[in-house]
Image 1 (tube, rainbow, N blue to C red):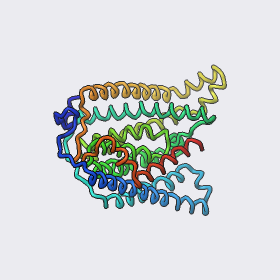
Image 2: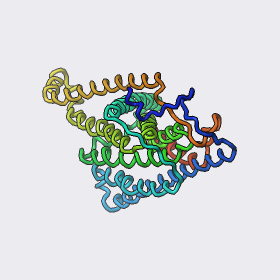
Image 3: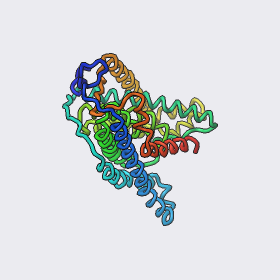
Image 4: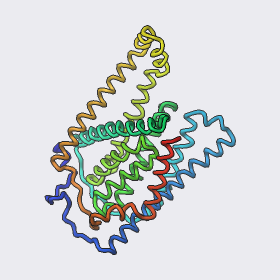
Amino acid sequence: MDGMNEYNVMTGNEDGMAGMPERNGDGEIKAARKHFSRLGGMYILGTIVIFAVQLIPMTLLRLVKPEWLENGNIYLMVSVLPMYLIGMPLLILLVRAIPKEVVERHSIRAGSFVTAAIMCFSIVYITNIAGNLITTLIGILKGGMVQNQVLNVTQSVSMWLIVLYMVICAPVMEEFVFRKLIVDRTVRYGQGAAVVMSGLMFGLFHGNLNQFVYAFALGMFLAFLYVKTGNIKITIALHMLINFMGGVVSSGLMRMLDLDAYMQAVTGGVTSMMEYIQANLAGIMAYAAFVVFVLGMMIAGGVLLIVNLVKRRFVLERGSVVIPKGKRFSTMICNVGMGLYSIFWIVMIVTQLFI
């Protein structure tokens, strides 16, 4: 994992923080709270804008051609694409009014990129399992299954739209909005603060518990890569890779398996099952290879993460303004803007669990 050192700025300090001058008086704390509140305020305002650009065409279509909304492709284009093509660009304009600091750029070798990709896959797969276990437990307690929104979308629309939505629009816009904009405007309070805020706001924005767990974890890791490289293209590329495997490849494999035919074969006895296996052998073998890939990424990435943690390679530097311990949560989260943003999305997540 030596390649990670290219963007891991080792400081030599015992706590892994850079020895920068501290300014943590009451005036700085108040200014920091106001700064985070303004950031959260812009994001909640941007959220309202995003909902508006989605709601308006949806409402018009319900009035004019309601039957079109039964088509998964049309529903996706009307509900999701306006968010990425209109809503998020408007959110960017709002957030850009907030002062920022430039994140210093550092190069990264191809080997380090591959290593980072393996760790990304491991983080996503492990935390996705954790998230599914949590939602399954909640489903058992409430007496009904918790809907997996991503699975519902990917199984009902054209593969080309999945590529446009998950592999192109989502990585580009989300990395700019939730990595660059947030990190650039919070890194003055330390790389740790920037990483946590980026991951938290990214995870909450997904609006459901299935995605929150892995989006929060992945968001923090991508934010770490960004604060160490200053290159948003790196995190966009990794995000595209993750979404390609999770959206395009997995969806394609599920379609190859023909799940409806599988359910009929299960209830039809041994003969029906053997016929199903013979008819879908290619899909079964491809899915088995994908499972091996997932397990391999989980193990390899998990080992790399542990090794780098043990060797203290995930170093986070102090910022020019240091928020004292004991005041970080209240300063960063317990303010009007971030409070509204957090409460809004927590309500959305809880609501999704019980619909």
